[in-house]
Length: 611
Image 1: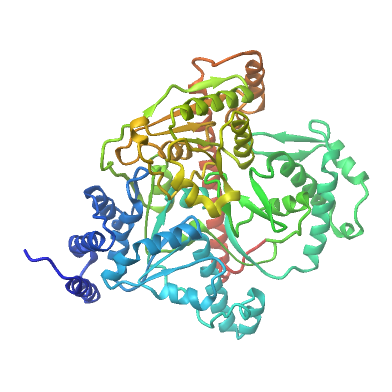
Image 2 (image 1 turned 180 degrees about the vertical axis):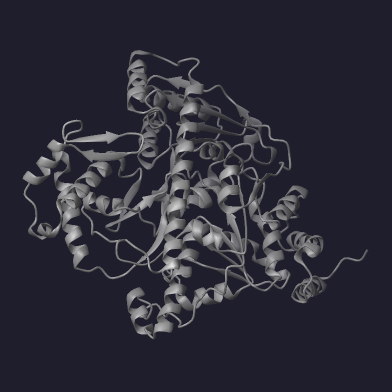
């Protein structure tokens, strides 16, 4: 059979588009469409879709999330359902975790799409409105979930302001006139969404609302005084004397003595207008934040602004804020300007945004453990895709130590030993502060580690690309360069491949699996080992303070690696996962109830948002 020319390939693609718009169902065109995409990939990218990638693309087309192991080519697989959905002419969106990955993947796949007559748009932070409008007008649009959510809210605000004749007010509130905003919504509808790193976006980020704030009023100025005052006096309150702390629900409750102490303290004059019950809440919130929220672990201060570090991905969560006054209490604690979510112009959660799409699909390296939750909330199935080549990574025995210090020493020795054999080593940590602490220990042992955390996001791809070279030692937070493959350098496969060291269990098993999946990609060799300690945070979160304290005391008396204790850590992890799932269900229920009430009142649930 004679091969199609490039012109015929494009013409055939246009023919498929015409058939779809004439009413032919997409399902009937799947085989032809995927064949065209596979051929375009071979010609323009030098990459021919594997059979397992075709299988993954077909499953995603049928409203499902696929689990593909690290290095199996999710970026190329995504082109199949995106192209098929784009044939309808309503726009197909792909949401990923940051601007860099959105731009990288779109530019990387652009020649494939162009060969088939498809246009590609990219949404980036701080992008002017006219450029956003052009990007959404393309057949296929890449961007982050956050940016697409904010665009949805801005469009909704604009539509209302135009209806009320308040276009100038809208422009002043959002700074639109300075950024060259158009007087039309930028999005043209929510048709098909493919979510990259679906477990991270659909589960871990789903609870935090995206908020567009309006201008603060007098009440917010009084609240700011109260937040600052509470941050200053919080250290005067002693647990079990002035307050009780519930470790399961993470709640602070002032005792009778604590309330007396609040009343006795000198307060700013502006707080005279606040009822005592409200002042108690400010103090309780300040104590809670001091106990639970830590700089360089849960957040960073950048340009005098609090930026959340996503606990599951390790990345900075731009544009997001904690709710219930927690964000403002942290701002007061760090002495930066206090911003207010209480005076909201618009709000939507990532969960709400994706539920508004006609069709939803996704892909990730770890979704099977969250199959039930994804099915219940998003009504999508989860399917595991087999690897193109059999995986040959090996798990080395898990080591448990009595104390954190012993564990870190063992981690350094393991990394040093592997480095002596010139193998690349990737070490995963739970937080920024721990990654930097470990890097200092490694440097003291004579190694030269490269650190990858939320402080170095601009160099993320460069760091990850080099992590597979001989002798490289990379210390990463749980982001571990998600979305970028670690390819082995020359001769590394003969040395045993990449060695991954896991230094602590995360609050979700999915994150541990993501880290482990960095080695052994596409049939490469690789090994991994888990290091644990009896004072790890997962035991406190899973079993509570009393049992955690007993285990910590036991660990302080022991020396060397302990036997037969690994299962206890995984049980604690499962308990934490169940609690998070319960919390997400409760939040989803309350959000749905709030929206139902507002609709019954004739209000827009995304714009008429309570503080």
